[in-house]
Image (tube, rainbow, N blue to C red; front, side):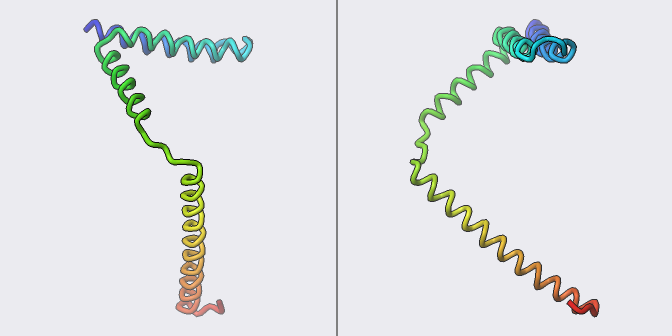
Length: 115
């Protein structure tokens, strides 16, 4: 029950930051953005002290560790893969244009048009 109350407080802190952003339009934009970020930070701190919050932060840490293990492609591999995708998209676009034109012509013939 205590965790639910803490989660509710965390949500209310985030909402308070967003509401402050919209209720104070005369404030400088930086201050308004800092209100939202402060609400998010305060909500995250309160959420950290709940069981679901600790589980979430542990999961996020494990996910970050897993992304460090990923072998990212080199620049050359990225450019080659991008070029292959672009060529494939162009070929498919051309193919679909041809099929569409043929179907348009066939429908025109079926309906007795002059296409």
